[in-house]
Length: 351
Image (cartoon, rainbow, N blue to C red; front, side, top):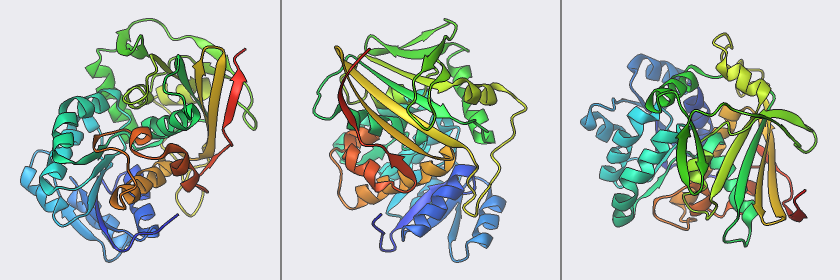
C-alpha cells in the first residue's frame, strides 16, 4: 500500500472499537490522526497510548466543537455510531470545512439518509462523501462492482457473508437497536428496484461457499448496508444479502461477549469469507474475499478510501459508494494482505 506524507485526518469516535483500528491504520500509512469524539476522558486515555496525537473533544449537538475538531484537517472519518445521530452533523461540519467525509456506517437507514439529504448539496459543492466505507456496505459493493466487470446491468446480486462467528461490539448492538426502532421491528429487503419493509419470516438456505469454508446454512435476506450501496450506482433490481446462521445467532443472543483480541494488532480470531454473485440471465459472475476480523478490516477499507480521495484517484463527486467512486478491482487488490481476493470467476452458467 502507498503511504501518505503527514496529512491530518480527524477520526470522530477515535476511542471506539473500530475507531482504534482506524487510528492505528492511519498511523501505519503515514497519516497523522486527530482524535475526536464525545468523551474527553476516553480521548485522553487513547492519546496516552499514542503519544503526540492531538485530542479534540466534540459533540454532535455542538456545531462549533465539530468545527474545531475538523479545523485544518485534510479529511474526516466518522467511526461513531449510532450513525442515525452522528452522520448528518459530522457531514455538515465536513461541508463547512471543505474536506472529504468517510464513515463506516452499517445502518441501512442512516446510509439512505446520507444519500437522500446530501447528494445534491455535495455534488454542487464538488465535495466527496463516502458512506458505509466498511466491511458491510463497502466491501460487498466493491466485490459486486468488480464482479460486474463490463456489464452495465444485471438481474440480481447476492452478497453471502460466511462468518465463523460474530461477537458484536456495544456500538453494533446500539446501532442495531436504533435501526430496529426506526423500522418498527420490520425487516427490509431490496426488490423490484426499491427498498421494501415487510414482516415475512426469514428463510434458511444452503449457500455453496467456496473452499475453505464450503457449503453452509445461511439466513436468507439477512439484509445489510449493501442494499443501499450497490443499487446507488448499479442497475440491479434485486439485491440481497445472506448471513451464516452461526453468526446471526451470535448477534441475536444478548449473552454473546464483545470481541476478544488474539494478536498484537488487537484482532479477534473471527474469520470471514464474502462471496458476491451477480447474475444476468443464465450467466453468473462472482468475486470472493477472505480475511480476519470484520471490525479490523474496516480500517484499511476506510483509510485506503481516504488515501485515494486525497490523491485524486476517484471517479465521482458528491455522495458516492465505494464501487462508484473507486476502481473496484484495483481497490480490492490494494487491500492485500488485510483481505485476500480470489481471481474473479467470469462467465459461469447458473445452475
